[in-house]
Every structure is written in C-alpha cells, then in structure tokens.
Image 1 (cartoon, rainbow, N blue to C red):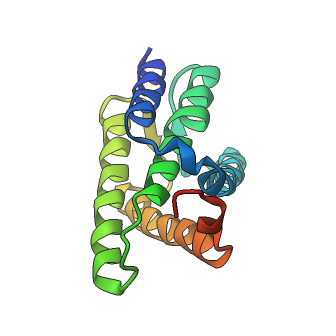
Image 2: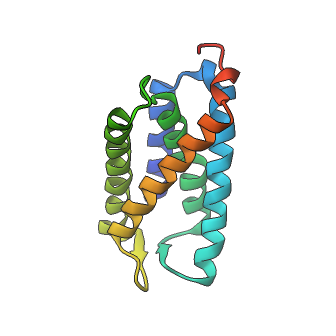
Length: 150
C-alpha cells in the first residue's frame, strides 16, 4: 500500500504542477533518468548497496512510473532562468533535500534498507551528481528548443 500511495501522490503533484505543454522538452530527460535508474537497479542486484522492501511489482510501479518521472519532469521544468552558480546551487539544494527526505521516509518506514557501506549521505551526494547530470543533459542537448513555451 505504501508504494501505491507514493505513486498516486506523485501523479497528483504532476497533474497539479506540470506544464504539460512542455512534455517534448521534458520527456528525453525523463527517459535518460529512467535509463540510469534501470542501470542502478541492475547494479544493486549484484552489489547490494540498498534494497526496497515489499512486493517488487508495487515498488517498480511506484518508483519507475511514479516518483522518478514526476520529480525529473518538475526539476527540469522549474530550472531557474539564471543558470549562474548561486541560483543553481540554491535550486539543487532544494531538490537534493527533497530527494533525501523522501528517501528517509522510505528508510524510517522500513520500506528501504541500506547495505554494505551505503548510507543517507552517499545518497545525498549521489543526488547532487544526478541532478547536475540531468541539467547537463537538458542543457547540452538544448532540449528547451522542443518546447513551445520557451
């Protein structure tokens, strides 16, 4: 039930806040993020740094089709107009904090466990890198040109 609630909540947030007219701009970044998530999922099968606890179908539906696409979509959509260091660092601070809070909810509720040397701080550092990577992917490929609103 935990994962279904997150899935539904994610899409409610998307329906409320997403600029659906910009989907052509956002979708390539979402697919890129999903590809990285799939690679990570496969990696942790063989080198278990963390695991999600519960029925695999609900876990993958909630995360892979709910939280991940919604978060990446909104992250790119709300990028600051100024891409200088100070506004971008503030922006990433907000998004990495949100990501680690969501992860802590999973850990505290017993729906995620860390293994080996992995911990919340590693996740937080990885979030900074991933958000930077998603931004670079969007910027380098000039995906904003696919949007009618930009």
